[in-house]
Length: 147
Image (tube, one colour):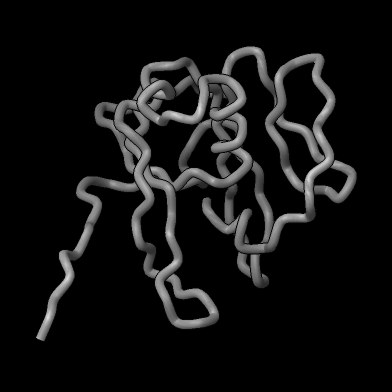
């Protein structure tokens, strides 16, 4: 029988409800795609983009699964290589919402000089100050499921 190496993430995870809106933070590790506990419709594991983030006022970095809006904002601000995202000043923005009837807190990480807005379809985008969002295809509900 063949086995595949299991990838796990060590350390404590950030909880959106416990984070302070407007607090400063910085990514302190490379962001890596990691299998999540959730499954796609075909039964394969969903992938989450995980990194460690140091929040101001907390003693240790915490694991965070970055949502697509945050990743797109980081790419616009710092480029496609997640190594370049490290040690950049970010602002934490939290938003209470319901997903499948459950109350959750979404967390966005906003680079300096950027802001979070909603596009014409109500989806969160992170854009540079003074720029208008580019029109994109409507994302699937899975794109905003990382909190």
